[in-house]
Length: 485
Image 1 (cartoon, rainbow, N blue to C red):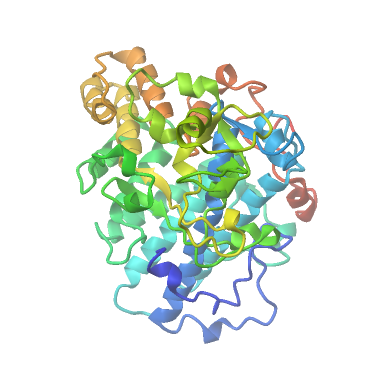
Image 2 (cartoon, rainbow, N blue to C red):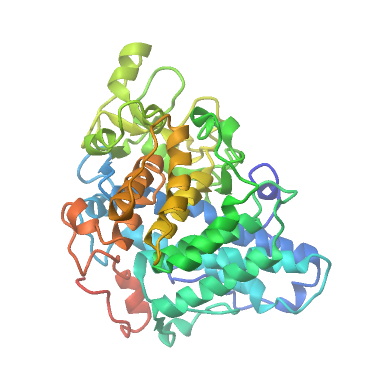
C-alpha cells in the first residue's frame, strides 16, 4: 500500500471525519448523505483505504508495547519529556494520559471506518466484493484486538458506526464478546481472501490466519491456535535468509512478511496531528539524539533498550547487532557524534530508527517511510511452537521443529528441552527475536510473567491500562474504571 494503495485519494470520505475528535469515535457529520456513497466499487475501495489508513497510527501501540515492558526505558530529553510515556515506563500511569487516550481514540477511529463499510455492505454488488468485505473485517478485528489487549472490556459496535450522541448510552462489552467478534471476522477473512494480493500491502489469507492464531493464543486456546498457525507455516511464507536485510528498505514486504503496515515519506505531518502522518512516527521518536554520522538520522532518543535485554542474547546470536545499536561502539568506529538523552543506556532500537536518504517531508522526525513488520513468519513459527507445547496433550516434537528453525537462522544450536523447560525456551526466543517490535509487554501479561519481570507492575491492575477519564466522562460517568485505577 505504501507504493500502491496509499497513493489513492481517500479524502473523498468527508463523512468519515478525521480522528482528532473529542469523542472516542469518529463523529458523523450532521449533513451526511449516505445515499450518495457506496454506489460503486470505487466508493467501497475508497472507504476501505480510509480503514487501512488508521493502521499507520498503531506506531504508538508498538512503541509503548516495548516501553511498558522490561525491554526498553522511556528515554527522551528529560524526565518530563512526554509525561504519558514516562508514566507508562514507570508503571505510574493514570486515567489522565494523553498517549493512552490516543490509542483509544485512534483504534476506535479504525473500528468506525470499518463499520461504516459494514453498515452499507449490502447496498451495491460488484465482482470481488467478498474480498473487500474480508479486508474490512480483518481491519475491524485488528483494531478491536488492540483495544481489548490494552483496555479489556470495551464498547462493541457490530456492522454500524457509533454516532454522535450514542456515547451516553453505549456500554462496555465483556472482552469475551469482543474476542468472539474478532474470531468471526478473522475466520470470514481467512475464508474469503486470496493467498497473495496483486497490490502490495493488502491483507491476505495468511495474515488473517496468523492474526486468528494470535487471538487464540491470547485466550489460551492452544489447540485452535496450533491448527490455524500450522496452516500459515505450510506456506507461502518462509524465513528471510539474510536477517540483516529484514528491517531495511530493501527488506520490506519480503518472504517473511505475513502482514506489514505500509508507510511513506511523501506526505508529512506535525505534532498537532501525529496520526495524520503517512510516515512511521515511532522511527523518529526512537532515533539517536543530535546524531551526526553515516547511515542513520537524528531522532528524539525514546524507547532505549536496556542492558538486560542486550544480555538476553546468547553469544554468537547474529540478531543482536541487527536489533540493537551500540551507539558508543558505532560512534567510535564511524567517527559519529550524538547527544545523550534521559535514561541513556548506550543502546537504540536499530530495527526502527531513521536511515538517511528518505524524503522526510514536513517534519523529518515524523515522516519516516520504515514499514512496520506487524506479523513476521518468525513470530508465526514461535507462536505455533508455543501453541503445540502448551496444548494438552502437548506436541513438543513439533514445537521443537518450529523453534529450532528460528534458532538455526540466528546461527544458534538446537534446543532439545521438553515440557515447561521448552516453554521457557520459547518465551526467551520470542523476546530476542521480536525485541523492538512491540510484543513483549503483552507476551509477559498473557503468560503471567509480568509481575516478576517488570519493575512496579502490580498484579490485578497493570494487566490492563485505564480507560481514559475523558471517555468515561463523555459516557456520562456510567462506565466502571478498570481495577486499580
